Length: 230
Image (cartoon, rainbow, N blue to C red):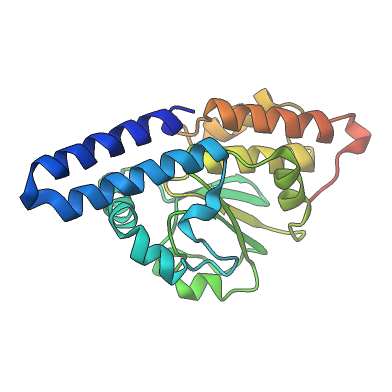
């Protein structure tokens, strides 16, 4: 994944720039250190570095350590939300909805599963208190182990499911495709992606996400009779 290489290089460049320009010293070196740490986390495939808890909150120590990168993520997300002309969420099937991270005021109340895939954001308190809330954090552009994806999809309650990451394209596409494969609404990764892109055109997977999804599909899509509704 490009992040494992780009982030450490960018981080080192910022650290050098901060050391050369004393007026930027603290903020730039701090942000650079965050990027280096994130690059290492991408290399190790560990979302835990950002301190996302199962209840959807971010650990206090993470705010202290990663304040620059968490702040940057929040600014970028809000700008993208304000500038986007597309809908916040899209219906895929009667039981599957995909979208971006929602504000508390935007969240519908009728979901049986509310799947949060972000590792870099705390979920609004009114959402994470819901019994439907499911926290399955993944680094932006990253992918979980296929077994972890299989367990997460298999543990969903029957009923209507909403899946979101930050903007609702990469991580969301991977998880939603897995749901379509498990339910039998799609018989292959290619069919699942066609369905998803048909309702939310921006959806696209990184190489790691596509490999994870294909490994998942190899164990789930065996025959029409083996498909089960999550």
